[in-house]
Amino acid sequence: MDIDSTKAVVSDTLAQVTEKAQDTGWIMHHILDGNYLEFPPFGVVHLPELHLLGMDISITRHVIFMWLAVIILVFLLGRVAKAYKKSLVPKGINNLMEVLILFVRDEIARPTIGHGFEKFVPYLLTAFFFILTCNFLGLVPYGATATSNIAVTASLATISFIVIQAGGIMKNGFFGYFKGLLPHGLPTWLIPIMFVVELLGLFTKPFALAIRLFANLTAGHIVIMALLGLIFILQTYFVAPVSVAFALFIYLLEILVALIQAYIFTMLSSLFIGMAVHQDH
Image (cartoon, rainbow, N blue to C red; front, side, top):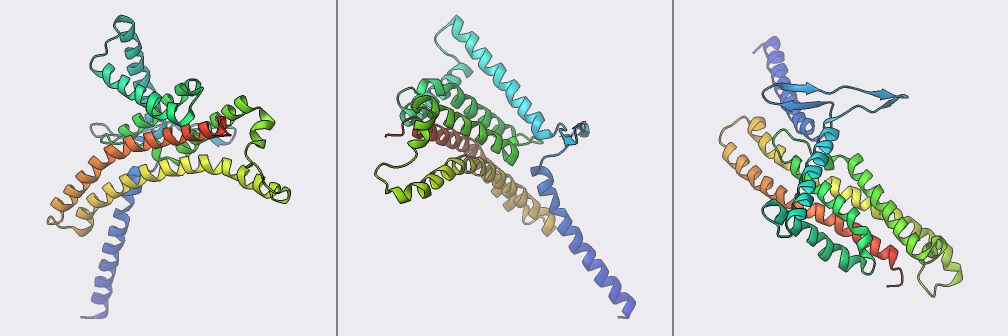
């Protein structure tokens, strides 16, 4: 084999390796946000790019699916409210919605917040149903999971943070709330240190809420895409049945994860609210 032939073989090999490495980029293409929507009959629909005062405020596909989640919830909950005006006996989808609402109220808000939990139930229900709907929309083919976007989960966690602090301040007063962060009986020299630690703890709670929701939703989709990608990376039909079977299993598991993550976010938010409102307990 002459030098030119050797160079050609090496070049072809490098090209194949590079092509396979580039093939894995489609995983992040389906996970990350973008200014487009995918519709198989119409191809890719590009969304308008908007800028205001140097800031990019473009409408992305995660924004579209958040809007879609809001529309679905307004329609469903509005329908449930109208149905209850006609009859107090729920039927069909109304029965399912009542089960979920009572679950959030009686199994999450009541035990974790205690006395005065009623005023926080509307926010907890809003967070629970919004996250749950966004999670399920991400499981629809060619859909997008808005809750796998760190900006979305951080915004939800920020709202929870505001509700937590507002609840604590309204119940205990501004100075009383921050004074209650410190355990009783601390030595005087330890008070400044513990105050800083407890103050940082206030911000680690919403940080944990945001990262937990973002990481769990993103990881599930990456695993599904990676399993399906093995078929194309290995370029063999023998791995297809195994990849599809495992991807289907993970997909079914993702349905459970969508429910669990909505529950965990709501539960932790309610727990943190209860800790802020009832500092003596």
